Image (tube, rainbow over all chains, first blue to last red; front, side, top):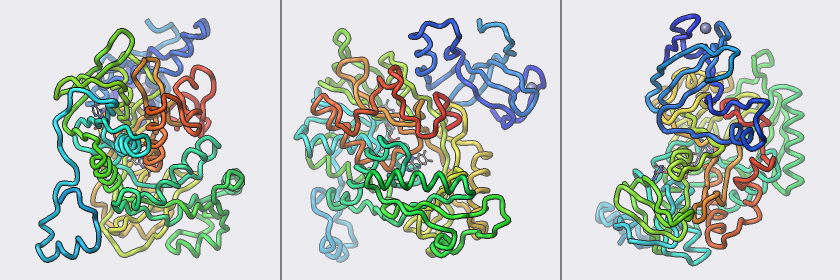
Length: 87
Length: 420
Ligand SMILES: Cc1cc2nc3c(=O)[nH]c(=O)nc-3n(C[C@H](O)[C@H](O)[C@H](O)COP(=O)(O)OP(=O)(O)OC[C@H]3O[C@@H](n4cnc5c(N)ncnc54)[C@H](O)[C@@H]3O)c2cc1C
Ligand SMILES: [Zn+2]
């Protein structure tokens, strides 16, 4: 990790970024109670690669999605996250 | 003479032969085909569970299955602070039960776990801090748990090396002391429980990773491991930072995320800090080991990881905080730093008891605070495994609480472990 390539700002120090949650744990206002509960309170928590939402909090404040290996910390497939719903 | 009692006499006798007579403290058996209970994870909690199953409930066909060596996980990586002065009544009661077990643990196990109730002090740095500490102290005393609010002068007298200047960033205004709190020797806790459990017939099987489960319909009836299949009437997960992974092998998703926590130790020096120092405003905790090293830690890394390796940045923060409180520490050399994978639950409290699958049980989610619970956690988990029902003290910590809106959120943070 150490450097994260922000889709807007390019490679920046990891310390400028903050982890939010995994893409499968976003709770929408339309979600049924069971689905909302599952998204809020359960995680796959893989010992491997997860798709995560991060924010360039101390930079452009933009949101992004990437795949990150939770053992090696290697990041791939960085893309910006806009107001449109997650695919 | 592996089964012998440890005593001053045995030590003296051994001196004549250069202490060469000490045998292995526990057997190294091959896994049997089946057990009443298979405990996954040979940390302090798993070993304590096995011990109390055998000792209190007479269930001796028990195996503790450990991926590497016992105590090599968070048991051997933590800063060993033991206390029960939490904020929520459920945590206070559960952890004070554990603290009472600590108080007689060395005798119970015939193994010196070096429990040292040297006092655990939370510093307050503002009027707001002092108000919160006073509230917590009152709540603790109402539960029958010791708490003493100390003023500035009393704290200065107790820890002469604290920076007491009024014009610093974190001025010390006072503190909340639990005199019964303190530290213990982490390795000795694992070894003591292992030896005592082994003597009651428990098989401790090291270098044996659980890779999956044997099922009969929806029921779990055993585990597959790197050393073969083992059948079990009950399978008990107790793997700390690997809770998500090991529950995931059964298709379960838990309210737990694994995060990194670091700690460090300095060279050994003469006694300079004789109590445990923590803070109401800073995430910084400092104590001095019996060997003389200053042991300290700080915040977790704020994102999920199984790396068992932390960021230098977080370590710098932790060190800066310790130096701000005790400037004399700047003269010491750091000799080691390390990290552990903590099982951060989504309300900051542990999960003890049933899973949605028959025959499969869970003890995890202890976050960065489970060492203090080692004997208590084992006691309560053993009770559940033996009787099929939660112990009264463990009942609030069931997995169902998240779906039912009964979370026990000490920090009031919600399901965001990175903010805890
Ligand atoms: C840096 C740090 C500082 C801490 N400081 C404190 C403190 O001051 N006070 C406090 O109360 N708590 C503290 N904690 C928390 C405390 O260490 C843990 O909550 C507690 O040790 C966890 O329980 P355990 O001892 O059973 O876990 P562990 O010792 O981690 O045991 C779990 C075991 O499971 C094994 N395992 C994992 N997967 C498998 C598998 N598939 N098959 C077989 N075995 C497996 C692992 O190898 C490991 O040995 C700290 C933690 C860290 C990392
Ligand atoms: Zn940016």
